[in-house]
Length: 207
Image 1 (cartoon, rainbow, N blue to C red):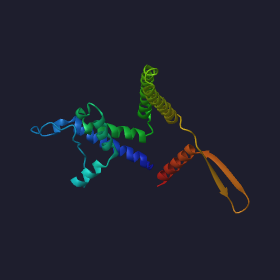
Image 2 (cartoon, helix red, strand yellow):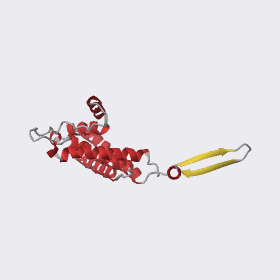
Image 3 (tube, rainbow, N blue to C red):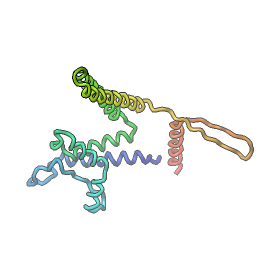
Image 4 (spheres, one colour):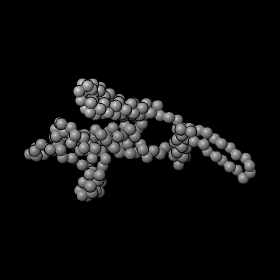
């Protein structure tokens, strides 16, 4: 049987974590009837087999996904109403998609950010125009901020283009024999990665 890639194992584990977290959120019937409604700001961690409660809490506190959703809640006006455990489960599912080479969510995020920055550029440019004649200092400030927003919008679109059309990298491999013979092979990094995956698949079938 073919051995699974480490990245695939990590993605599968994250999906399992997300499923367990989703179960805790979507199945409140598992909680005792007399227990009050769970605080949406309290994270419900999951415990690995044989893990102590102290280690569970420490591991959860250091997970990037949990720290990310905690930060998101603090910056949103309605953050206190969002369930942090449900947010963590959703984020872990998205991380699993990235590990499976599904960049649809990342592309959506980058395009939305580029449009937001473009809107910010227009608002700031209009503010600059309103202050151009009477308040030159305010005009300069608003115009500087507008051009920064424009630059960031352009950079975000360039990043989006790179995600959708990753550049092909060529690696030059030099093979030197005992004599003066020399062979140079050019092949893309993507092709080498595919060859390594095929080799691992064949090795797994032979075992």
